[in-house]
Image (tube, rainbow, N blue to C red):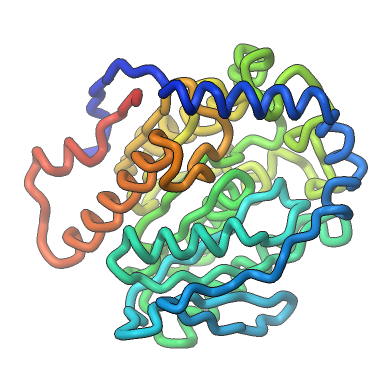
Length: 332
């Protein structure tokens, strides 16, 4: 099956989510975040306290060719066999932050103790394309060289990290290499040409990127002098024949909504098993609400189910109804 079943569930965002969305919009407007992102002011002034690793985890620092990476695993009885390769967001201009260390802990929790490998890949403007893709490939190769099997690696990414996850898979396919077990994509940035319908229809609705052309999604530091329609930059324009199953989560008011819906459509047409979940009223990478925001909690639970089904598929074939339920489209 190509995973083209549709099951629409009517839903409305929670009151708390609506409050958070309105606060984001107000802060974005009041603080003129768009121009500050464009000129690099926010990145330069963003200082975080040292991350304190919870006692239940162990973090190993890994030196890759051009960047560092972190391997998070359980302190007791770690699952070193199966791993999530997490590619963080940040518009290709933001380095890894503590939030992604928290994400790693969540992936470990929803994945039944799965280890999580997160490279702090190089970012623009100092390192435009193809630096991020080179570092993602380096991280993938490190996992293989350390004994991991592609069939037990899930690549996950949000925003730019979601686009980078797709670009990495396109590169692997184009070079005859084995692909991962699956993909988890949260609000993936797949079209850096900004040509999708939702860039217009959600322009006044998006609380983070809306009402301005000076936001991160119009920043071209990563693209540089390259063609933005290059599939390794804008993976929406790539070919998805032979791709592994993917879970795509996106908010209904995002300007990047069409980055997800068009990706799902194109992948399904290529025969890929796709679950597209559109969360009503949600904003870009609302999963950062972790387990506090109701919609975010549901999204992480959905990602956990996806990981469990991928695990089962490796061991035994699923029934037709199970396959249909996993890869239906959902408006949540």
